Image (cartoon, rainbow, N blue to C red; front, side, top):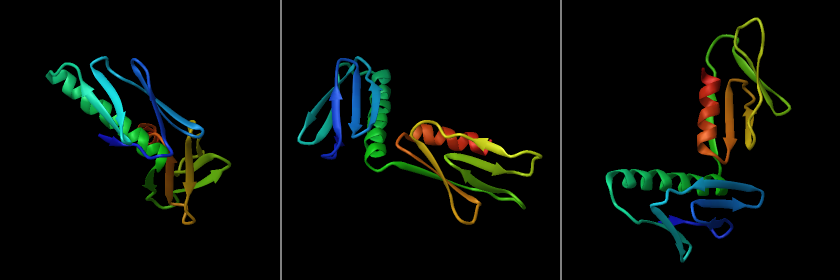
Length: 144
């Protein structure tokens, strides 16, 4: 079971589950073998057919829903440290500008619902948002 905080609204239809709070909303596709139900502030997922594949889908779906609930209620943050002589980062509005020793600066525009922040030392970047998968993908793109 997944605990649903009181300020988060969970709705489900046939093959779709939405988790929302004020202006943030995540939609999650539900496989046809998983039936959700809410009881006493907990979201329960039940399998209609138990096989090796459906057990894998159950675990994936449960993780996606749990990450959405945590992301909307608390948010996720990744921290990246820049190491190298002369390497630094700075903010320009919402954009992140990286000085990595090239002849030009690298400007990164954040996707929707993602925010960047740079510490005073200019070598630590914080990436924040409500979707764990998007935060990880942005961090991976910055590292590459």
